Length: 114
Image (cartoon, rainbow, N blue to C red; front, side):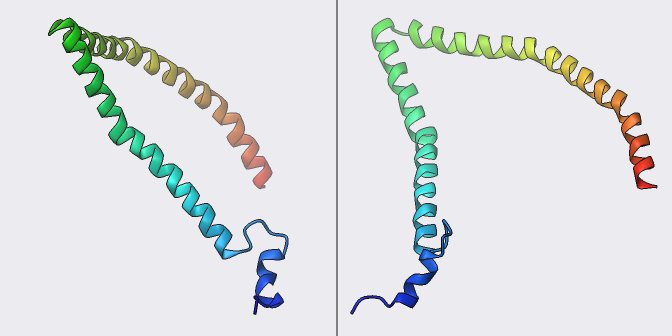
């Protein structure tokens, strides 16, 4: 005997997520996708870095990895030194613009509340 018509009714109501099995399968799909993203970030990226570091050291000797990691750290420090004042200036400008526009908004808010 197959399933009765009344047991199939919740899945055929016209909703996308009406059936429990459908919701569970979509949740499992999202979980697998998220797990795959985390797996790439946690396992594959460090292994790739180790692989290319080994190849550089094999081809260029000690100078290869030192130059690449030195370039990375120099770029990170330079980025920090250049971006910090720029971000502060932008935040001050945005805050000033918001504070400049705040009093008219407050006066309109008080008028509409009365």
